[in-house]
Length: 99
Image 1 (cartoon, helix red, strand yellow):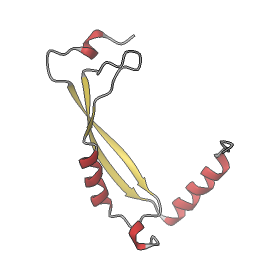
Image 2: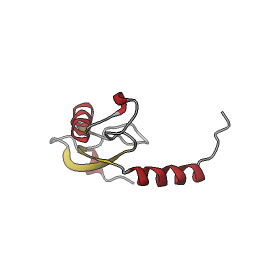
Image 3: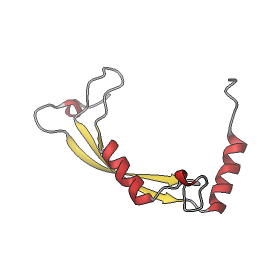
């Protein structure tokens, strides 16, 4: 059950700041080929331009909710050692989709 105030249309939607952490794996200065190199500040700026906010909808009715998330991005380059560890964990836990 979602409270009725979540759909109130009398005022602007309630704005909630939301910080999204993004891990950049193998996109650092040593990335090959060179076009795969990303500056974290540039990537954060791009994400903010593409998706600065999000206003969710109710899954049951499709009605827009009276809340809007103001999105902020914090990108971090992952060290080569952490990238290797992450890769190993993913390989151990991946399951074939049969395709």
